[in-house]
Length: 507
Image (cartoon, rainbow, N blue to C red):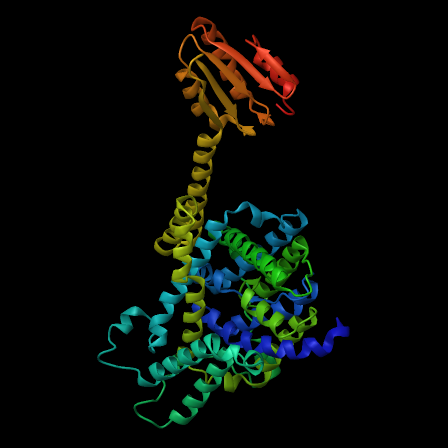
């Protein structure tokens, strides 16, 4: 790690500037104390960074879990929610031990994209009142009576800075990649707040500012950390929340690992099972001291890569920089208007749910777009778990339908001689029973049927039973059957089980 320190130190500073507003903003979106976002950022950098096998991945609180966290805190209370975070970490360690690092490959990409899109829509929607200086949409409805001028101005200016930075300035020079847009927006917000004090029209309410505790002693600092209420560990809702967080956090981490490994110019390969173990350890510690759940995150990881990070030292150093900021400048952090963080999260939500993504999914066809849309709708109008479940169910139905349609191909081989040919697919399972039975019933009397299994590797016993029944029917209808396999041709077999034991690789 220390051999690349000259590259890792400047990269860690960039990642710190990106992470600071995101830690606060994601805690805000999660309905959690803002200090908890900083805790998880620190642990994600120092502990997870040290244990992880990723050289360039950076971990911390993730926007993808904000909706689950918000719902869980509202339902369980914060101390009970922390129990779920600890349990989620333990489940992730179990995933790693059981080598579930491949779990991400078993979720259709359309469902995963739908999950992230649905989360983006919810994040975007929930930040709109905060952007205008209010907590809820009910308060926002009174905007005509109490327009929050200061919050709106700093929110609009911050949004303009973020858009200008990402679309224009970041392409103009390296300085604009070292100094990231979110930290510039935060600095502008602090300056605006400082110079607007005393103005009746631009003044901020305390509820419109970041509220990070300011300890006046070491004992007071220790008391900032909240511990889980393990007396509630028997609550089934806590276990359901824990499993949901473990699954979603693992998926988001594995997707990020795949993306960062592709972006890494040095093409390092991250061991996925070790990554799950590291994330689990981080979540156990985060839950034990009052932090949010942690995943590896693409925004900070890509910033690390773009800034020249070479080893895990950059992630670890960014965690220490977050810790130093919490200890040394909490008063300064409390001068950040919440509308600045709302602007940052509006951009995050938009990037997760870009309109262009809907267009691209539509162009891929209904087999991709239907599970995607169902997942998004389920998450937005119900909850995350229901959305993912519905999306998976639709995805499975699509697979079954295509399997039903593609199990075989029946056509007339020679019209004049009444010869028909049925070609079976590479794998034919019990899902295909209905389709094949229907086609065999269509074969007219007094014809010849060629059954081509040369490309078939696996034939389910259920299909063989159908063929056995067809053998009796074909004799009654004067249908001559010819089985064409790699090992030869068999005319009018009496026992298909014996035929396919000899001709197929697997039964």
